[in-house]
Length: 428
Image (cartoon, rainbow, N blue to C red):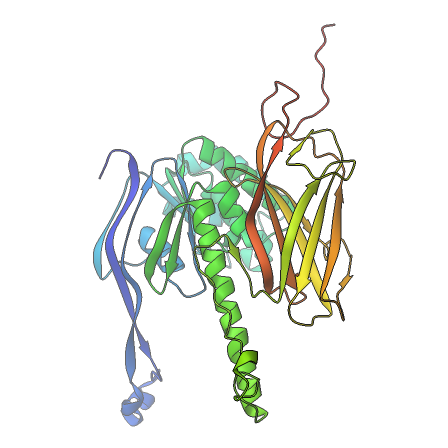
């Protein structure tokens, strides 16, 4: 292995034999032997990637693309058909809720069993027992059988054990989707601490905001192959554009099917009127601007507190956004959204008309204007990215700009960070 790497995956393949109707009993095997047909399903097809020591990496992709299989190969729950996987250091994993827990044993007993699987000695577990119980917040339930736990309590205990084994590599598979909001925030805070301490983290998740904000690198897997890997914000943008494209294609296909069932031409227009024909919408998966163009943003202007167009703001001033839009296909309602990001993709703020309980009625309209009004954001001086969008009521993107323009905030203070606070120092 290269000295800077914690994980090296080289040309790994993995396939599974899938039975169409597999007999479970001796009688079924004897009487219905012809039903034992199977297909070989390739889940991973020659993937290769490296993860550096202390790096946080996300595996992203649609359900069934091979993300969880990759994580299970890294934990050695299963082994590849070909290729090699090399890892440096102690590995801790959260693959499935309560994996390795015995339902009839208490939470305390399962701590010893589960932690020993990760390689801890009894003395090491004794030393960390209180930390595990305190983090899980299961003081009143720790001596109850875990079969009496809710899924959230399972997750609390499993996560508390995994982060207290002093692992060099932490593997997590979508487990943080379970649990209340406070505990999720606590888990993410702890993961940030582990990241800062140099722990290598590989995360499987469908939360793209987490990928952008927490992970420095993302790997997009599709149909068992790596499509692209690199800076998390760039990979996420490419992936989201592709997924929206797939959604639009599915909508177009359903419309064609409905037209055919109704006895109409598949494209919904008369075949002798080519001027009216419209091809299904497609998008460049690598674009930072995508949508079905049923409604488009003619312009999105940044206005200062005097409602004058500007490209720079003072951090302490109120500002506005003016959306001028055009409707190309009749729609009763549209949702307008905006977001502000740092240049490296950290999401500072975002909202839309639906989240604010504002309904933009566009019935019978072909164009219009919508204003967004904001109190001062108190940002530190520098450049920021404005995201703006129009989406349909069913959340299908019409006109979506990941990077519409850059906004300059005039520098006012010599502090560090992103947000300014009114503070003072004094001696007593």
